[in-house]
Image (cartoon, protein in one colour):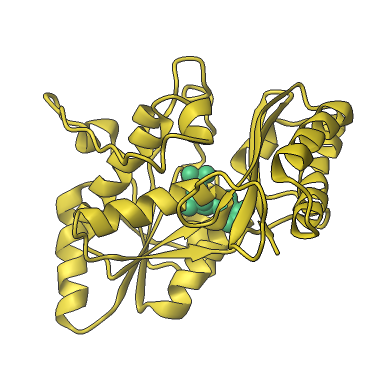
Length: 282
Ligand code: AMP
């Protein structure tokens, strides 16, 4: 199955303008490729709500730290395009690094507050890199709606904020996390894990769900999160970056749920993978 592929911003813009001129609603699904059912759920949500859907693949160097997996991040453009085409997507945008960051590029996008916690601290510079590339993609595509996964809840909150603060007209929508039959959130990085490590990885959502339940039942979040971190280590995770209960919108730390809309967030390492997940506390 073939799918239209744009390599330049100009090609994409010309097509989007033509679609919009005929009254079509355009959806954008930004990804780093190595597609799994989580990505395809974003494409499907976009297809439900839009007439034309562009899926982007760009492994953004500015959101990776020095010792992270930028060089080994899986590049599977052909099979990704085929999966998106099968799902019904209309076009891919796959720019080169020089198309995105031409010589002399010097602008950063920093969202204060929301990035001063969770992955913003555990991966210094990561959220700034995400803010930078997503701002660019939103400005490049001028889509009506853009879709992001709730698996990366902090990222979604940051993107909603930057779109609002910078008067970007594209509406930002979240899509629920797609999980395997054991509740493990699908992630490109799960592919780094062997069978034994996958078994360990599957404990993450189980422990988070129990912790969310205990906090909702009246437990002190700091105590319950501490217990969860210990349980993760006991289950075989090699390092826990954080387990924290925070307000779902402002990401402020919360100690007692008491009817507030809050979520539990965790990041932990197993094998070569750093996994993140989050659950509603209610
Ligand atoms: P990535 O390619 O990992 O940068 O992810 C691209 C988009 O897919 C982001 O908006 C992610 O939040 C979303 N995503 C990744 N994994 C999942 C999942 N398991 N369920 C739903 N969305 C996901």
